[in-house]
Image (cartoon, rainbow, N blue to C red):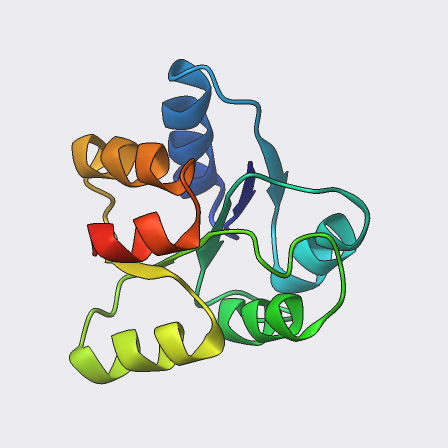
Length: 127
């Protein structure tokens, strides 16, 4: 799995949660690093923050979806502190399969991750 999060504490919490469930996790601090990773390695799930320096999560998600790389159909969970309906719509329109709020509810997050193992449609149904 790939966790894309610029805030070190948030990134550590996500990684700890995922590795605690037995997942192997790579990380990226911004959307550009995420694109560099997704161009060369296939991931089972991408967890993408929205607001990041260099390249934000919305732009990175659009480029992953629009590209011919190995992750163009990988489930993407978008995280944001802003959960207004219009923000959620923008995130989903960018290509995220589910848009969820920060701070992360880790009990619910584990359920989302489990659904992602069954593909994008299963993840969308979890929303």
